[in-house]
Every structure is written in C-alpha cells, then in structure tokens.
Image (cartoon, rainbow, N blue to C red; front, side):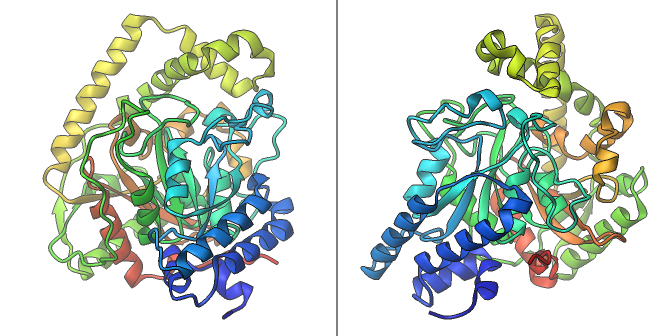
Length: 467
C-alpha cells in the first residue's frame, strides 16, 4: 500500500490506471477511500442520490482478483466511477430528478452502464441532476453545491457528476448534455467535460429529455481521462437504432498538436464577451499555438436562430418523452419541467417542421465551416462564473438565457462533439473554461488538443479545498 487518501483521491484516470495495473495500490483500497470521502463530504455537497457501497466493494475485489491473475480489461479496470441518475442501473431506482420515479427500479443496465461494467469500472452510485435533466431542480430535491464556493452555480443538469468529480468523491462520471449540461457543470466546477457526436454513445436505458438533442458523455479531471471513459462506452448498440455504426474510437495518450489547424472566429472576441473571458480565450490560443498548432481564421455561421429554436425543439421532444407520465402524474412535476412540457404540447407540426428545416440548414453550414479546421475554439459562456443570486433571476431576463446558451445549444442542434477544458479562475476565484469543437466523430482530435493544452497548463490539477 502506497500513499495517503489525499494523494490518491484527486488522481486522474490515466495515473490511477497505471498504479492499479502495477499493483501500487488496489482497487479495493481506492474504492474505500472514495466511500469514506463520500460519507464525510457528501452530506454537504449533495452530489449523490444513492451510494452502492457494498456493490462497489464487491466489484473492486473482483477487479483486483482479475488483475492479479493477469486479466486486464483496459484503463477503467478497477476505477471508481459515478453515473448520472438518468441512466438505468439494474436493481436501483432511476429517478431522473423526479419525485414520482424514486420507486421505479431498473430491470436492466443502460448500455452505457453495461459497458462501464465490461470495462471493469467500479460503479460508486448514482448522481444528482435537475428534474428530467432540464433547467431546474424538483422542489423536493436539495441541489448539489459547488465545492469551490456554495454561493455559485453548479451548471444545471449534470451538476452532481461534475461536483463529485471536482470534489474527489469519484474519479470520473457519466453526464448527459441536451443544451449545455456537460459543458456548464464542467466549467463551473473546474473539470473536463467531453460531449461526443450525437449517436456516438448509445442512449438505450437513458431517460430522455429531448431524443435528438441528448448526448451521453463523460466528465473527468483530464482530457485523456475523459477520452478513456468515452472510448469504453462508445460504439454501435443494436438496442439503440440511432447509435452510429462508426469506426471504434481510439484514444491515445498523445499530446502532440504540431500542424493541427486551430480555428478561431475573431468576431467572437469582439462581440459581448467579458474581458476575462476574452483574455482566457486568447491565452488558450497562445498555448496551443506554442505547442505547434496552426491558427486558422474561420467564420461560424450565425447561431442566433438555432439558439432561439432550441427551446421549442426541446419542448416538443420533452412533451413526447413525458407524454404518458405527464398525463397521469402532472401534479407530481415541478413548475419548470411542467412548463416546458406544456409549451411543447402547443406546437403544431408546421411549427416543428420550420424549426427542423432551420436546424438542418444550420448544421450543414456549421459542418462546412468546420471542414477547414481540425478543431475550433469558443467560450463555454460569454461571462464570468454565475452566482446563484444571478441564476435565480434568469426567468426574468430572457436575454441572459440566450447569452448563456450562445455557445452551447447550437452544438446540440448540430450534434457536434466538444470538449470543455478548465482554463483559469475569475477575480472571485471561481473556475473558468473554454471549449473546443470538431467535425462529427473527431473526438480523438478534441482529446489530443485538450491533452496538449493540459500538458502546458495546470488548471485541471487545481482542486477545491475541502475538509
């Protein structure tokens, strides 16, 4: 046995995987450290819905036995992972942030959970989220707290996943993103978030918010770690006919970006960004160019209509996803999710067709713009980290909601892959981040560029001070 709890609980996945494989420490040891930290910290952080302590220890012992006998399942073997409580985990409830679902136990694993198990990961438990993965928590839920400062936003839906990863009470987590719900939490909590191409990861066994906008992805401490998780869960699934028959994802521990074409639309720097966000983005470009990337001027298509169309598109699909439950249990829904479902019920087929046509046009224009670069750089949001006080006024400020979604929801409308990378701290010492975007099925480029940036910076190695 080597190291203390403090030396292990904030390790990233590649480092931890190496230590497990060389038997520097055991999966059971690492899992017990995580469970002890959950017991000590989660009553305050509120990241977990349910902790599977006995199952996790049993899985860790199995992983140790397999590795002792020379059977290595891959880089996630023996690593404790958390799963957003939107994914079915056999024998456990999948509440999805909804009070009436807490007694509904899953009969089988979601494909993403099954693939984590096949990779030898240890499932620590289910993680908290907003109601139905939309924009607010059910009134019965106590929201997770930002470990850097509880007065600040945790980033909406995949909040529990990001809070747990940032706090050292899991080494990585499954998240989902329908309009920004991996990227906002990753940015707000100072961790790395990887939203893959739509269809790269099966949605079988994952509760829907909006089927054509929902992306299942990963949250970890490093780009390589997030990529290793994505590699384990990606691939065609016969249980999800919308999953892509694409070449297998191959993530390498490669931080070389020499010659990589880095796209920047300079108009973004000149249009409505806080000075700190503009400076962060400029410095990130300098880091990547310093590593050998080639800066390429590009122009993104106007995404303002795509942002405006996201809400009605999401609302119609949410109304479909909740059609049966909402008809019988409307009184059990919180006001925000109920409101978006009712909104979705009001749209006609003609209204929806106009939205879908504009969406196809935007996605095509974006694909054409991205053909000329390998990755493009954009903010996650145009302003500094948001306090809970500011977030509480969002409903009164539609212009703030539109600004918040400016760099997130368009990439759900297009289905594009993105990676979110920690990139400094605000004046109030809260994490800041940017994102890289690529053509469909080019997650390997995103991970490589993210690894290059993280090889030159230390932001992803910073952690909140927790007792």
